[in-house]
Length: 455
Image (cartoon, rainbow, N blue to C red; front, side, top):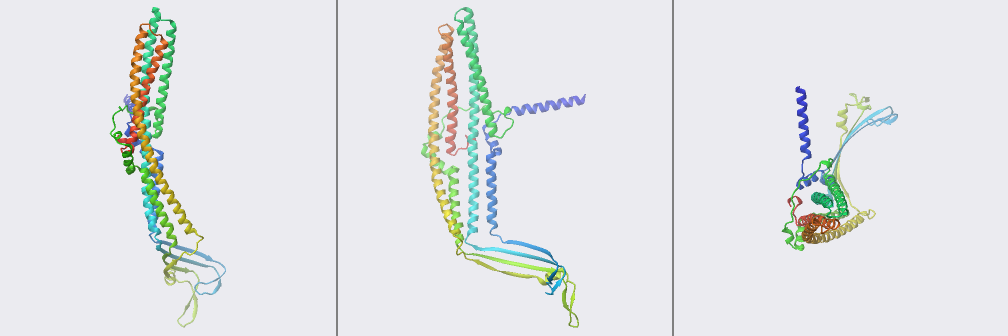
């Protein structure tokens, strides 16, 4: 009995957790933050930023000396010179050698310094690029979020229209039974109800697809249970829209990362020219080398009577100590002719610099065009919304008047359906223009420096 109760408790517990997971409503902030953590494009850009950091470590490592140790062991079989006696002997010798080599760049045309500066700029550029990708993702998320809200409200409109049509069908049935209207009006109303039912199904599918689009943007697998919070977005006056497009553009020039990326790439191109020009200058390296060896060959020694005799090999560490050698010095390289490779590298860097300058100017033009376009689109969206509201008021009056005339038999079902269709379209236009204006304003505020999550 206790086991059955225990299982029942677990079942209720997991059912509650599942229900709670399905009832979660995502806010716009939660959607954007989740996209920052899981979006594939953002993850790839973060990896690029990590590579830029590794490149900086490489550039810093150029200032450090290179240290390499070596060891070797070989067998010489047959007629060989004994490395100890320097006599030709037919036997097998084993030789062991160890070494240590150290090299350091003393001067290399300031290339190492310029490479380090370039790597720092590359990190900054990668950070700017990551910021831009996040901005793009946040705009896409906001657009998809508002699209779901629009589809939700549009579904409510279609369901309301279906309910009204069903009531009109019942009213038509009563009027037909009373002989007030012809039976053809009832058939028209039935067709209208069927069309309205199709509109509801279409609206439901559109809502599901919009949820799927946002869920995929957030990298969510369970999109069927995904839903957003029914936040209320009303058309309000934006302080940003009180600004002039020129002032918004000037603010965008200071804050938008597109120009920061282009400006940083321009500085990187200038560093590339300095690095390439460093190839014309002499380079100076310092080096140090240590070596020691040992062998198992016989050695020649002098006995107490002054005679030369052969004896076995000395202890290996004694041989290493006796044979050790050191060498150090400097090496100066002066470039004279290298197939014009250095000169061509400089010319390529100059071309890349000119390309970066053109790209920077293009980014300024693109930003100016985008700001003025966004501002104009927002103004146009507001005018469209206000016009749709006026049209809805007129269609509402016309539809109410049509219902009154239909109720007293002064209008047939076909004309009533036409009026109702125009009324439903007007409702949808208000919703469409409303959310279009809200998104357009968010874009303008975005260029003005207001993040999506703070709007």
